[in-house]
Length: 124
Image 1: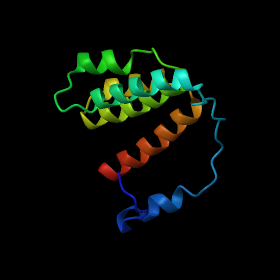
Image 2: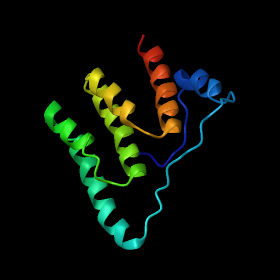
Image 3: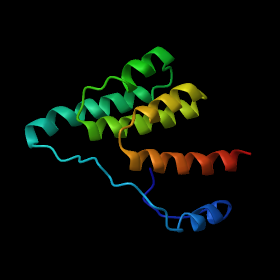
């Protein structure tokens, strides 16, 4: 996490091309919760994100954590996007695809897909 906004020269064209208008589906998620529910949901979401970023995470542990589906939909979708990136970084391409395919928010899926395309082009 950084507290500064900057663009590396090597990323300038990708940033510039991201300014082109793109038709986007509506954001169907809301993170709004009443306080008692928030007090239950947020620690669970953070715990799952911590588990997903664990150094010795196995594929089985990944699936059990990423696909648990026990939080409100918006939180599940956010975890699924994070899980897709965790799987990508570990080269578990099948789990990256499954994670983003389980996301029910078309806007997040579109954002992920566009970002993933740019990332793959950068890796070439």
